[in-house]
Length: 510
Image (cartoon, rainbow, N blue to C red; front, top):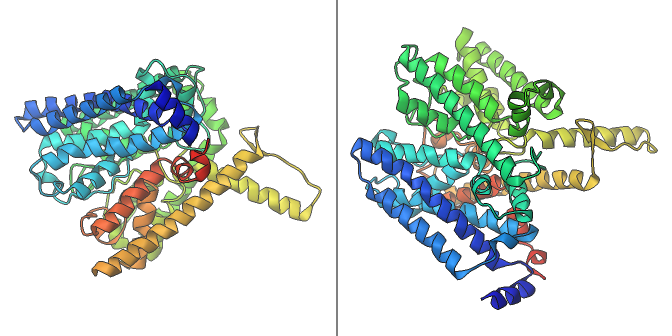
């Protein structure tokens, strides 16, 4: 077996066997996640077997891959790209199994189940489900839990528990952690992963307690413990799945403000948050250029949107400020919750709708659970443009690009520019393909709706416009369009490069 693996590696240039062996190990660990919905199903006297069967299939698949292959401890740079890409495809598939095995007609079709599962694991929040009340409570919570697991990344979770990863481990966390580079907190990759997960779990627990307290004290009568847990699972991973077709619209303003605050926290760099709050270095927040730009963009967009809503008569007073802040934070952090149906703004205040679509592109900070381009890339490109203007006036002017007073090498700058160009190109292609397919099947999809659908799935934002708006569903799309958007969610969550690398000949050459 080892000889065959060595021959394959020499002929392909990548150790496929070791990659599959590691993916199998990840699946074995992930099978434990099904114990949570099993416990809920027992408590609510709901069917257990969809979760038990899905867990058994996941464990069997992982064990089988482990028995047929070996060498996960030798995973290196090349194998890391393959592991990350395959893991997200396969984990989404096993997350979909309870949907397919359930009796719910909304998710029983494999393509719909896989769409919902991929949306959850990539923390996109785009949903096929229109009748959320029709889901069993255990199935509804599994839907929420899947995005919580995807938030920090199944790869980081595995790094915290798999003891034998060393060099390959750092490759995986750099591929998984959003942004051009991951700011490590410890020399040990397992320590880094564990510390980030502790912070992630702690913030989730705090949010659950705060939301539940609003319900217990009567501030928000709709916010019971189930809703608090469900919405914490949707907020911290910037996922956006909810328990009501109206998203968070029917919850009290206090709950909406709390969720907005924690969405903003989830969209910040977790390594930076760890330094600021765990290591008690709050000044690091003020010193970080990306964090300052992140807040500036968020506050500036919210202020503009509040003025537009007030001037157009859509909202007034506190409601205008609250909805402007909530929607700005929700869309920019790629969470996708909605405090109001902004789909209706298109007819009354088109500029407000354009702001919503524009906010799908900045994204959150690098090292956060948010998707899209990321603020740090905008920061770097802005510095590049400024340098180009300076060099136009002074050709002899030479200056390195700096972020947080640290010089960024030109290779990283070029990688950022390449990423943004790829991102924009894929976004445009996705919008065109959705529009073509809609015309093919006779679906009423405007160009603006296609643009929003492509931007929201590639950026892992969630809702779009039209029938796929914040209070709508992606169910009317054809299976082909759903396949396109599944690919966009997958590519966007992996930040394009790991998938793009797999499509090059150089990757497979020895």
